[in-house]
Image 1 (spheres, rainbow, N blue to C red):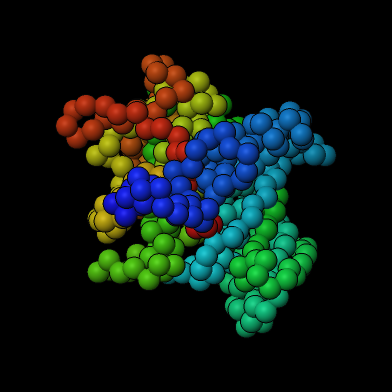
Image 2 (cartoon, rainbow, N blue to C red):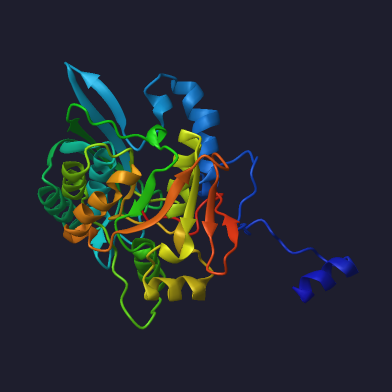
Length: 362
């Protein structure tokens, strides 16, 4: 840095900054930056200012993880997602697993029973067919584990250098039982906030594999289908108000989106949020906040206070919810804002992230 300052002061030839990038992108630019895909403020602005005005429609205005639609007298959930994770294979999963579980979980967060998937492959010229085969096998196995069927699809190939091996898109549909009404707008003051288990494992697992980092213990992605867990929860507590899987933007983004949609405040006990020691240590080393790190096998539930014990018991009785914990509550104070109570007795505002701490993790 001193060399740059000296160069500018003497009037010598200026360094070329054209290849530099800012880890915390500024808002209001004229070009897409990585943060637009991060699930934070930039993503929300892209949807609000570009996509929503172009597409319109009352169903899009729900802005849920999946759209809830009426078709032939039945209620269905419909969702689509695109996966550009790098690397394609990581501890605990692969892009094929993500493509199934990501879409299945979005459907489950509306209370739907996932049924059918469509899958689109975008392949880069030159990628090894063995890699494509491994991805397809992983995707098929994940679909069978999730109890869904891949019924249609598409394949495109782009020139070498214009992709990253394999990109995937999956769309899915599922059936919602009569009487189930789960959406962000149903959060109410007095609701208890529950998470189904430890946070931050997926993002740190992918990053450690990508960058060749070692933390003394292998951190494995939590990538898993949550349909069975949601069914167990609804069997115990039919009146679940909100479900959300904290993927891009992590827990912090999920809570902020719910608070904004329902016009309620959310207060979280910082000490109650389950973050594994190895994830916390890795994040501390890298200057990351585990509340903003993506998860692919966890859910956040808002339930009426009188049903909190039943919800917690139902989640803990399932292998994917064994680490479930109450982390906070809804309040009529500070509407639209998420606040954390710290271990020192103070409070802090938990903002919606601007972009993404760890890009290309889903």
